[in-house]
Length: 68
Length: 392
Image (cartoon, rainbow over all chains, first blue to last red; front, side, top):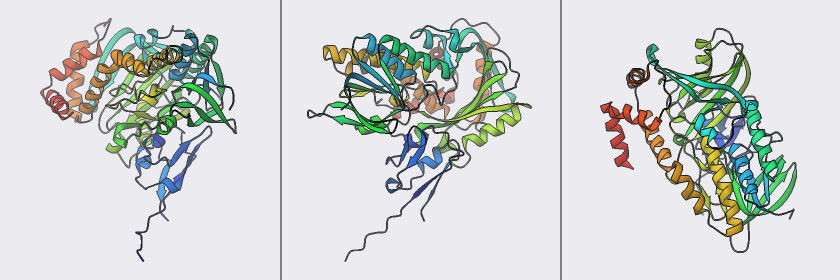
Protein backbone atom coordinates (compact mmCIF):
# COMPACT_ATOMS: atom_id res chain seq x y z
CA UNK A 1 0.00 0.00 0.00
CA UNK A 2 1.31 3.44 -0.91
CA UNK A 3 1.27 5.85 1.96
CA UNK A 4 0.43 9.40 0.95
CA UNK A 5 2.54 12.19 2.37
CA UNK A 6 0.57 13.60 5.23
CA UNK A 7 -1.01 16.90 4.30
CA UNK A 8 -1.16 19.44 7.05
CA UNK A 9 -4.51 20.88 7.96
CA UNK A 10 -4.10 24.57 8.68
CA UNK A 11 -6.47 26.68 10.65
CA UNK A 12 -6.81 30.44 10.06
CA UNK A 13 -7.14 32.26 13.36
CA UNK A 14 -8.90 35.59 13.00
CA UNK A 15 -8.73 38.14 15.79
CA UNK A 16 -11.99 40.01 15.30
CA UNK A 17 -10.98 42.76 17.73
CA UNK A 18 -8.25 43.73 15.28
CA UNK A 19 -9.80 42.82 11.90
CA UNK A 20 -11.02 45.85 9.94
CA UNK A 21 -12.95 43.84 7.30
CA UNK A 22 -10.88 45.39 4.49
CA UNK A 23 -10.41 42.27 2.37
CA UNK A 24 -6.66 42.67 1.83
CA UNK A 25 -6.23 39.03 2.93
CA UNK A 26 -8.99 37.86 0.58
CA UNK A 27 -7.25 39.61 -2.32
CA UNK A 28 -3.98 37.72 -1.78
CA UNK A 29 -5.41 34.31 -0.87
CA UNK A 30 -4.59 31.98 -3.79
CA UNK A 31 -7.09 29.28 -2.78
CA UNK A 32 -10.22 31.21 -1.78
CA UNK A 33 -9.81 30.13 1.83
CA UNK A 34 -11.04 33.52 3.04
CA UNK A 35 -14.36 35.20 2.47
CA UNK A 36 -15.65 38.59 3.49
CA UNK A 37 -19.42 38.79 3.79
CA UNK A 38 -21.67 41.62 4.95
CA UNK A 39 -20.71 41.22 8.56
CA UNK A 40 -17.27 39.72 8.89
CA UNK A 41 -14.38 37.72 7.58
CA UNK A 42 -14.60 33.94 7.62
CA UNK A 43 -12.24 31.14 6.64
CA UNK A 44 -12.66 27.86 4.83
CA UNK A 45 -9.78 26.03 6.45
CA UNK A 46 -9.87 22.99 4.17
CA UNK A 47 -8.74 25.28 1.32
CA UNK A 48 -5.79 26.72 3.25
CA UNK A 49 -2.35 25.68 1.98
CA UNK A 50 -0.42 27.53 4.67
CA UNK A 51 1.27 30.11 2.41
CA UNK A 52 0.77 32.85 5.02
CA UNK A 53 0.18 35.51 2.34
CA UNK A 54 -2.82 36.69 4.37
CA UNK A 55 -0.81 36.86 7.59
CA UNK A 56 1.92 38.92 5.91
CA UNK A 57 -0.53 41.24 4.17
CA UNK A 58 -2.93 41.94 7.05
CA UNK A 59 -2.37 45.57 8.07
CA UNK A 60 -3.83 45.00 11.52
CA UNK A 61 -2.01 41.88 12.74
CA UNK A 62 -5.38 40.15 12.94
CA UNK A 63 -4.46 36.83 11.31
CA UNK A 64 -2.38 33.83 12.31
CA UNK A 65 -2.16 30.23 11.08
CA UNK A 66 -1.95 27.13 13.18
CA UNK A 67 -1.35 23.59 11.95
CA UNK A 68 -2.36 21.54 14.94
CA UNK B 1 -35.28 33.43 -10.58
CA UNK B 2 -36.23 36.86 -9.30
CA UNK B 3 -36.83 39.79 -11.60
CA UNK B 4 -34.15 40.02 -14.28
CA UNK B 5 -32.32 43.18 -15.25
CA UNK B 6 -30.34 44.21 -18.29
CA UNK B 7 -27.40 45.21 -16.11
CA UNK B 8 -26.45 44.26 -12.54
CA UNK B 9 -23.74 46.25 -10.81
CA UNK B 10 -22.11 44.58 -7.80
CA UNK B 11 -20.80 47.03 -5.21
CA UNK B 12 -21.98 50.57 -4.49
CA UNK B 13 -18.65 52.33 -4.05
CA UNK B 14 -17.86 55.23 -6.38
CA UNK B 15 -17.05 52.90 -9.31
CA UNK B 16 -20.24 50.85 -8.96
CA UNK B 17 -22.56 53.81 -8.47
CA UNK B 18 -21.13 55.61 -11.49
CA UNK B 19 -21.48 52.42 -13.52
CA UNK B 20 -25.12 52.02 -12.48
CA UNK B 21 -25.85 55.69 -13.16
CA UNK B 22 -24.43 55.59 -16.66
CA UNK B 23 -25.98 52.23 -17.52
CA UNK B 24 -29.37 53.61 -16.47
CA UNK B 25 -28.77 56.84 -18.40
CA UNK B 26 -28.02 54.59 -21.39
CA UNK B 27 -31.63 53.46 -21.25
CA UNK B 28 -31.32 49.91 -19.89
CA UNK B 29 -32.85 48.42 -16.74
CA UNK B 30 -30.18 48.45 -14.03
CA UNK B 31 -29.80 47.07 -10.50
CA UNK B 32 -27.10 48.26 -8.11
CA UNK B 33 -26.44 45.93 -5.17
CA UNK B 34 -24.32 46.59 -2.09
CA UNK B 35 -23.47 43.90 0.45
CA UNK B 36 -23.28 46.29 3.38
CA UNK B 37 -26.51 47.56 4.86
CA UNK B 38 -25.22 51.15 4.68
CA UNK B 39 -23.65 52.64 1.55
CA UNK B 40 -20.35 54.41 2.24
CA UNK B 41 -19.62 52.39 5.35
CA UNK B 42 -17.02 51.18 6.20
CA UNK B 43 -14.77 53.70 4.46
CA UNK B 44 -11.42 52.25 3.42
CA UNK B 45 -9.95 55.39 1.91
CA UNK B 46 -7.74 58.40 2.62
CA UNK B 47 -10.38 60.49 0.78
CA UNK B 48 -8.15 62.85 -1.25
CA UNK B 49 -8.69 63.43 -4.96
CA UNK B 50 -7.26 65.84 -7.52
CA UNK B 51 -9.51 68.56 -8.88
CA UNK B 52 -9.48 67.23 -12.43
CA UNK B 53 -9.87 63.62 -11.29
CA UNK B 54 -13.15 64.62 -9.66
CA UNK B 55 -14.56 67.38 -11.83
CA UNK B 56 -14.00 65.54 -15.12
CA UNK B 57 -16.65 63.07 -13.97
CA UNK B 58 -18.72 64.56 -11.14
CA UNK B 59 -19.92 68.07 -10.25
CA UNK B 60 -18.39 68.99 -6.84
CA UNK B 61 -20.94 69.43 -4.05
CA UNK B 62 -20.19 71.13 -0.70
CA UNK B 63 -22.23 68.40 1.02
CA UNK B 64 -19.35 65.95 0.63
CA UNK B 65 -16.28 68.16 0.36
CA UNK B 66 -14.45 68.53 3.68
CA UNK B 67 -11.57 70.62 2.53
CA UNK B 68 -10.00 72.14 -0.56
CA UNK B 69 -6.31 71.39 -0.96
CA UNK B 70 -3.84 74.12 -1.89
CA UNK B 71 -0.58 72.92 -0.37
CA UNK B 72 1.40 69.71 -0.15
CA UNK B 73 4.22 69.18 2.33
CA UNK B 74 6.60 66.27 1.83
CA UNK B 75 8.75 65.08 4.74
CA UNK B 76 11.68 62.72 4.37
CA UNK B 77 14.33 61.15 6.59
CA UNK B 78 16.47 63.46 8.73
CA UNK B 79 14.01 66.36 8.65
CA UNK B 80 14.36 66.76 4.87
CA UNK B 81 11.31 68.40 3.35
CA UNK B 82 9.74 69.99 0.33
CA UNK B 83 6.65 72.12 -0.15
CA UNK B 84 4.38 72.61 -3.12
CA UNK B 85 1.92 75.48 -3.19
CA UNK B 86 -0.80 74.73 -5.72
CA UNK B 87 -4.17 76.44 -5.20
CA UNK B 88 -7.15 74.34 -6.35
CA UNK B 89 -5.00 71.20 -6.36
CA UNK B 90 -7.77 68.95 -5.11
CA UNK B 91 -10.22 68.01 -2.38
CA UNK B 92 -10.53 65.91 0.73
CA UNK B 93 -13.92 64.19 0.52
CA UNK B 94 -16.31 62.83 3.12
CA UNK B 95 -16.69 59.42 1.52
CA UNK B 96 -19.59 58.40 3.76
CA UNK B 97 -21.66 61.18 2.22
CA UNK B 98 -20.02 61.10 -1.21
CA UNK B 99 -20.67 57.37 -1.74
CA UNK B 100 -24.31 57.77 -0.76
CA UNK B 101 -24.66 60.79 -3.06
CA UNK B 102 -23.26 58.78 -5.98
CA UNK B 103 -25.72 55.94 -5.26
CA UNK B 104 -28.51 58.54 -5.12
CA UNK B 105 -27.45 59.77 -8.55
CA UNK B 106 -27.67 56.21 -9.85
CA UNK B 107 -31.17 55.92 -8.40
CA UNK B 108 -32.23 59.28 -9.86
CA UNK B 109 -30.93 58.11 -13.25
CA UNK B 110 -33.34 55.18 -12.94
CA UNK B 111 -31.33 52.33 -11.41
CA UNK B 112 -32.80 50.17 -8.65
CA UNK B 113 -30.60 50.12 -5.55
CA UNK B 114 -30.59 47.29 -2.99
CA UNK B 115 -28.45 47.08 0.15
CA UNK B 116 -27.58 44.01 2.20
CA UNK B 117 -27.27 41.96 -0.99
CA UNK B 118 -23.99 40.04 -1.29
CA UNK B 119 -23.25 38.59 -4.73
CA UNK B 120 -21.69 35.18 -4.12
CA UNK B 121 -21.40 33.67 -7.57
CA UNK B 122 -22.22 34.13 -11.23
CA UNK B 123 -24.74 32.06 -13.17
CA UNK B 124 -23.86 30.90 -16.66
CA UNK B 125 -26.44 30.32 -19.36
CA UNK B 126 -26.46 27.49 -21.92
CA UNK B 127 -24.28 29.47 -24.34
CA UNK B 128 -21.60 29.93 -21.66
CA UNK B 129 -22.33 33.63 -21.19
CA UNK B 130 -23.00 34.99 -17.74
CA UNK B 131 -26.75 35.16 -17.22
CA UNK B 132 -26.93 36.60 -13.70
CA UNK B 133 -25.68 36.34 -10.15
CA UNK B 134 -26.44 34.28 -7.07
CA UNK B 135 -26.72 36.52 -4.06
CA UNK B 136 -27.39 36.48 -0.36
CA UNK B 137 -30.21 39.00 -0.05
CA UNK B 138 -30.29 39.86 3.64
CA UNK B 139 -30.02 36.18 4.58
CA UNK B 140 -32.08 34.75 1.71
CA UNK B 141 -30.44 33.07 -1.28
CA UNK B 142 -31.65 34.59 -4.56
CA UNK B 143 -30.81 34.39 -8.25
CA UNK B 144 -30.99 37.60 -10.25
CA UNK B 145 -30.82 37.47 -14.02
CA UNK B 146 -28.76 39.96 -16.04
CA UNK B 147 -27.48 40.40 -19.59
CA UNK B 148 -24.36 42.24 -18.42
CA UNK B 149 -22.72 42.08 -14.98
CA UNK B 150 -20.45 44.86 -13.74
CA UNK B 151 -18.21 43.88 -10.82
CA UNK B 152 -17.21 46.85 -8.70
CA UNK B 153 -16.76 44.74 -5.60
CA UNK B 154 -13.44 46.10 -4.48
CA UNK B 155 -9.99 44.76 -3.85
CA UNK B 156 -11.41 41.43 -2.63
CA UNK B 157 -13.58 40.97 -5.75
CA UNK B 158 -15.13 37.51 -5.69
CA UNK B 159 -17.07 37.89 -8.91
CA UNK B 160 -13.89 38.16 -10.96
CA UNK B 161 -12.55 34.89 -9.47
CA UNK B 162 -15.83 33.13 -10.19
CA UNK B 163 -15.77 34.31 -13.79
CA UNK B 164 -12.31 32.85 -14.32
CA UNK B 165 -10.41 36.12 -14.39
CA UNK B 166 -7.46 35.72 -12.10
CA UNK B 167 -7.01 38.88 -10.12
CA UNK B 168 -5.36 37.20 -7.10
CA UNK B 169 -2.54 39.41 -5.90
CA UNK B 170 0.81 38.41 -4.45
CA UNK B 171 1.78 40.19 -1.24
CA UNK B 172 4.31 42.15 -3.32
CA UNK B 173 1.43 43.48 -5.45
CA UNK B 174 -0.60 44.95 -2.62
CA UNK B 175 0.02 47.61 -0.01
CA UNK B 176 -1.20 47.07 3.55
CA UNK B 177 -2.91 50.14 4.81
CA UNK B 178 -4.12 51.34 8.19
CA UNK B 179 -5.75 54.63 9.02
CA UNK B 180 -7.16 56.53 11.96
CA UNK B 181 -9.59 59.39 11.85
CA UNK B 182 -8.23 61.56 14.64
CA UNK B 183 -9.65 64.68 16.18
CA UNK B 184 -8.58 67.48 18.48
CA UNK B 185 -5.45 68.37 16.51
CA UNK B 186 -4.18 71.55 14.91
CA UNK B 187 -2.97 71.41 11.33
CA UNK B 188 -1.97 73.85 8.65
CA UNK B 189 -5.26 74.37 6.80
CA UNK B 190 -5.83 73.10 3.25
CA UNK B 191 -2.61 71.09 3.37
CA UNK B 192 -1.74 67.47 2.71
CA UNK B 193 1.26 66.12 4.62
CA UNK B 194 3.27 63.12 3.42
CA UNK B 195 6.05 61.30 5.27
CA UNK B 196 8.56 59.04 3.54
CA UNK B 197 11.43 56.81 4.58
CA UNK B 198 12.21 53.16 5.03
CA UNK B 199 11.94 53.47 8.82
CA UNK B 200 8.70 55.43 8.65
CA UNK B 201 6.74 53.39 6.11
CA UNK B 202 8.77 50.79 4.17
CA UNK B 203 7.80 50.80 0.50
CA UNK B 204 4.99 53.29 1.08
CA UNK B 205 4.31 56.50 2.96
CA UNK B 206 2.32 58.08 5.77
CA UNK B 207 -0.32 60.69 5.07
CA UNK B 208 -1.98 63.35 7.18
CA UNK B 209 -4.99 64.70 5.32
CA UNK B 210 -6.77 67.42 7.28
CA UNK B 211 -10.56 67.39 7.03
CA UNK B 212 -11.14 70.70 8.82
CA UNK B 213 -12.47 71.20 12.34
CA UNK B 214 -9.43 69.59 13.98
CA UNK B 215 -10.03 66.29 12.21
CA UNK B 216 -7.65 64.38 9.95
CA UNK B 217 -7.21 61.08 8.21
CA UNK B 218 -3.83 59.87 9.40
CA UNK B 219 -2.81 56.67 7.74
CA UNK B 220 -0.13 54.74 6.00
CA UNK B 221 0.49 52.10 3.44
CA UNK B 222 3.46 49.75 3.52
CA UNK B 223 4.73 47.04 1.23
CA UNK B 224 4.06 43.93 3.31
CA UNK B 225 6.97 41.95 1.87
CA UNK B 226 9.34 44.70 3.06
CA UNK B 227 8.12 44.27 6.61
CA UNK B 228 6.64 40.80 7.11
CA UNK B 229 6.72 40.96 10.91
CA UNK B 230 6.16 44.59 11.83
CA UNK B 231 2.61 45.48 10.81
CA UNK B 232 1.19 48.65 9.27
CA UNK B 233 -0.64 49.47 12.50
CA UNK B 234 2.61 49.45 14.49
CA UNK B 235 4.31 51.95 12.17
CA UNK B 236 1.26 54.18 12.34
CA UNK B 237 1.02 54.09 16.15
CA UNK B 238 4.70 55.04 16.41
CA UNK B 239 4.25 57.90 13.98
CA UNK B 240 1.18 59.36 15.65
CA UNK B 241 2.89 59.34 19.04
CA UNK B 242 5.81 61.29 17.50
CA UNK B 243 3.80 63.72 15.39
CA UNK B 244 0.96 64.71 17.73
CA UNK B 245 1.15 65.49 21.42
CA UNK B 246 -2.63 65.50 21.91
CA UNK B 247 -5.17 63.69 19.80
CA UNK B 248 -8.24 61.51 20.02
CA UNK B 249 -8.75 58.48 17.83
CA UNK B 250 -12.31 58.53 16.52
CA UNK B 251 -12.30 55.74 13.94
CA UNK B 252 -9.88 53.16 12.66
CA UNK B 253 -9.87 51.40 9.31
CA UNK B 254 -7.74 48.92 7.45
CA UNK B 255 -7.22 48.49 3.75
CA UNK B 256 -5.47 46.66 0.97
CA UNK B 257 -4.34 48.81 -1.95
CA UNK B 258 -3.95 46.70 -5.10
CA UNK B 259 -1.26 47.41 -7.64
CA UNK B 260 -1.67 47.79 -11.35
CA UNK B 261 -1.31 44.57 -13.31
CA UNK B 262 0.21 44.23 -16.75
CA UNK B 263 -3.00 42.59 -18.00
CA UNK B 264 -5.65 44.64 -16.22
CA UNK B 265 -8.74 42.50 -15.54
CA UNK B 266 -11.20 44.89 -17.21
CA UNK B 267 -13.64 42.49 -18.86
CA UNK B 268 -14.39 38.92 -19.78
CA UNK B 269 -17.35 37.96 -21.97
CA UNK B 270 -20.31 39.94 -20.62
CA UNK B 271 -18.65 40.79 -17.29
CA UNK B 272 -17.03 44.21 -16.87
CA UNK B 273 -14.80 45.13 -13.91
CA UNK B 274 -14.14 48.58 -12.58
CA UNK B 275 -12.54 50.37 -9.63
CA UNK B 276 -10.28 48.43 -7.26
CA UNK B 277 -11.69 45.14 -8.58
CA UNK B 278 -10.12 46.03 -11.95
CA UNK B 279 -6.89 47.13 -10.20
CA UNK B 280 -7.08 50.56 -11.84
CA UNK B 281 -5.01 52.22 -9.14
CA UNK B 282 -2.29 54.79 -9.52
CA UNK B 283 0.50 52.48 -8.30
CA UNK B 284 2.82 55.27 -7.15
CA UNK B 285 0.42 57.12 -4.84
CA UNK B 286 -2.22 54.45 -4.34
CA UNK B 287 -4.87 56.96 -5.39
CA UNK B 288 -7.97 55.16 -6.58
CA UNK B 289 -11.10 57.33 -6.50
CA UNK B 290 -10.58 59.21 -9.77
CA UNK B 291 -9.82 56.06 -11.78
CA UNK B 292 -12.72 54.30 -10.08
CA UNK B 293 -15.10 57.07 -11.18
CA UNK B 294 -13.81 57.04 -14.74
CA UNK B 295 -13.79 53.25 -15.08
CA UNK B 296 -17.30 53.09 -13.59
CA UNK B 297 -18.65 55.67 -15.99
CA UNK B 298 -17.12 53.96 -19.02
CA UNK B 299 -18.21 50.49 -17.87
CA UNK B 300 -21.80 51.72 -17.37
CA UNK B 301 -21.92 53.40 -20.76
CA UNK B 302 -20.47 50.32 -22.43
CA UNK B 303 -22.86 47.95 -20.63
CA UNK B 304 -25.86 49.92 -21.93
CA UNK B 305 -24.51 49.68 -25.47
CA UNK B 306 -23.76 45.97 -25.06
CA UNK B 307 -27.42 45.43 -24.25
CA UNK B 308 -28.87 47.79 -26.87
CA UNK B 309 -26.38 47.46 -29.75
CA UNK B 310 -24.62 44.18 -29.02
CA UNK B 311 -21.12 45.70 -28.87
CA UNK B 312 -18.35 43.82 -27.01
CA UNK B 313 -16.80 44.53 -23.61
CA UNK B 314 -13.61 45.14 -25.56
CA UNK B 315 -15.00 48.62 -26.27
CA UNK B 316 -14.76 49.42 -22.55
CA UNK B 317 -11.20 48.13 -22.30
CA UNK B 318 -10.09 50.18 -25.32
CA UNK B 319 -11.80 53.39 -24.14
CA UNK B 320 -10.39 53.12 -20.64
CA UNK B 321 -6.85 52.33 -21.77
CA UNK B 322 -6.98 55.12 -24.36
CA UNK B 323 -7.34 57.59 -21.49
CA UNK B 324 -5.45 55.86 -18.67
CA UNK B 325 -3.28 53.08 -20.12
CA UNK B 326 -0.07 55.03 -20.54
CA UNK B 327 -0.41 56.77 -17.19
CA UNK B 328 -1.08 53.55 -15.25
CA UNK B 329 1.95 51.89 -16.81
CA UNK B 330 4.12 54.90 -16.09
CA UNK B 331 3.10 55.02 -12.42
CA UNK B 332 3.72 51.31 -12.13
CA UNK B 333 7.28 51.81 -13.37
CA UNK B 334 7.69 54.70 -10.89
CA UNK B 335 6.49 52.44 -8.10
CA UNK B 336 9.07 49.83 -9.00
CA UNK B 337 11.76 52.53 -8.85
CA UNK B 338 10.35 53.91 -5.59
CA UNK B 339 10.55 50.49 -3.94
CA UNK B 340 14.30 50.43 -4.58
CA UNK B 341 15.10 53.88 -3.15
CA UNK B 342 17.35 54.31 -0.14
CA UNK B 343 16.65 56.97 2.47
CA UNK B 344 19.47 59.07 0.96
CA UNK B 345 17.77 58.91 -2.44
CA UNK B 346 14.55 60.18 -0.84
CA UNK B 347 16.42 63.10 0.77
CA UNK B 348 17.96 63.99 -2.61
CA UNK B 349 14.63 63.84 -4.40
CA UNK B 350 12.93 66.06 -1.81
CA UNK B 351 15.74 68.60 -2.17
CA UNK B 352 15.24 68.55 -5.93
CA UNK B 353 11.45 68.92 -5.61
CA UNK B 354 11.91 71.84 -3.22
CA UNK B 355 14.30 73.50 -5.68
CA UNK B 356 11.71 73.25 -8.47
CA UNK B 357 8.62 74.25 -6.50
CA UNK B 358 9.91 76.02 -3.37
CA UNK B 359 7.10 78.24 -2.18
CA UNK B 360 6.29 79.45 -5.70
CA UNK B 361 2.65 79.38 -6.63
CA UNK B 362 1.93 76.58 -9.10
CA UNK B 363 -1.17 76.80 -11.23
CA UNK B 364 -1.03 73.43 -12.90
CA UNK B 365 1.12 70.40 -12.26
CA UNK B 366 1.68 67.69 -14.77
CA UNK B 367 2.88 64.85 -12.53
CA UNK B 368 4.15 63.05 -15.62
CA UNK B 369 6.52 65.92 -16.38
CA UNK B 370 7.66 66.44 -12.80
CA UNK B 371 8.43 62.78 -12.21
CA UNK B 372 10.22 62.50 -15.55
CA UNK B 373 12.31 65.53 -14.56
CA UNK B 374 13.17 63.93 -11.21
CA UNK B 375 14.13 60.66 -12.88
CA UNK B 376 16.17 62.33 -15.62
CA UNK B 377 18.21 64.37 -13.17
CA UNK B 378 19.11 61.44 -10.89
CA UNK B 379 21.47 59.02 -12.62
CA UNK B 380 20.61 56.20 -10.20
CA UNK B 381 16.88 56.53 -10.90
CA UNK B 382 17.51 56.70 -14.62
CA UNK B 383 19.57 53.51 -14.53
CA UNK B 384 16.93 51.81 -12.41
CA UNK B 385 14.20 52.91 -14.78
CA UNK B 386 16.08 51.67 -17.84
CA UNK B 387 16.80 48.38 -16.12
CA UNK B 388 13.15 47.90 -15.17
CA UNK B 389 11.98 48.80 -18.67
CA UNK B 390 14.27 46.29 -20.31
CA UNK B 391 13.13 43.61 -17.87
CA UNK B 392 9.53 44.05 -18.98
